[in-house]
Image 1: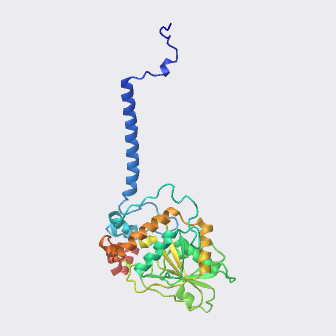
Image 2: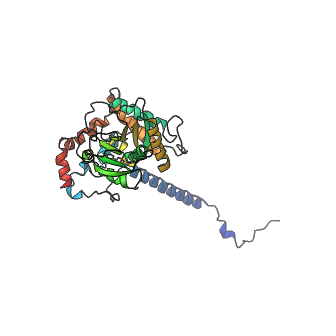
Image 3: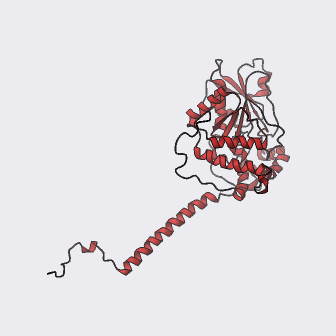
Length: 356
Ligand SMILES: Cc1ncc(COP(=O)(O)O)c(C=O)c1O
């Protein structure tokens, strides 16, 4: 015989399922879902909608960026001549960029390639680098070695190491013809290496009687004055050519550059300074191997995500310059060249405005 069950003192813990309670629970779940969805939306839109004019936060330590009082009237036309933050490219990518997705399972391993001089370099990025140089015609890549690093600043340090590590002489003198890019002295002397040291203007060095043991950095078109340069020291020292700006948006490309070590950077190629991708085209295998070793011991290669992003960007930029693709793609170089014209026509005038 079953009679009514005497209520236990714990029944209040087992709520009775009623229609109202089900509706209430569904509403609650709905609200949580709406909240989550709007959070995801908010985060992804903050990624896709950049702050117009780019980063305006604190200045990097040790770099003098105090040109604000001389800034041009329009924010969109700022070229910061100290750190050269290339936000001028942003409108092009906002308008013509093609999205890419890197799924979470991608590029998990440290290593990627079996066929490059370092397993940390992505094959597809190296293929894209070679293809872009071929399309643009600004550098010889045939029978050359490509080293990938965290921007051309890391590659510059790798090159200094590679050119000096087997030299038995006192620290090699690192020089560059004045006016030179302000980072060269800082980067050279930062770790107070026993292998090399900053020695200033290459013209002064050329005038000295002892010109043994040196490395000359040649930058063309030169930051900050835009001039085309050759090595000025008449000797047999190492040469590093910084060709960050040897692209059609800055200067006519007259012939493919062909030097022992040539440095390029995504920062000036497409404006993606934040991705920190640079590459060196190197003639000598041993030098390329030493540079790769430096990058391996310094940062264990370069972020594979950054390499994937760089390859994607280079593919769009390269294709947009090729005749066949120009029907459907708007050229990065031609579009951004127009933005640079005011600065290219009167670089001295612009520099004086910035420097006061
Ligand atoms: C001549 C020159 N070389 C190298 C760099 C640094 O490039 P990255 O961002 O690849 O380190 C700059 C940046 O302004 C530059 O002007």
